[in-house]
Length: 88
Image 1: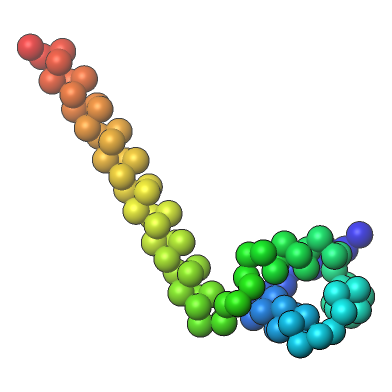
Image 2: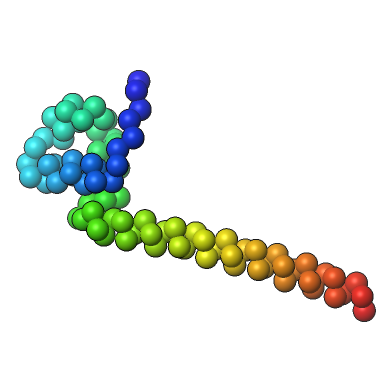
């Protein structure tokens, strides 16, 4: 089975067609996806616009980066505490 990668804009367009009244089976056949993929997209992206989705992706990236920084700082603090406890 061929796996296709859809962009967020394409996903939102498919979901808008679904809310317009096109049956799910027809959408899935038209775009070559499973019913499960449609419902997963609907759960994740329902009611979003493209601009909201881009903002969400940006916030997720920033959150990931900040979590990585906090993790690195925690490791640095732990290493410094161990180093100081050995000196005294």
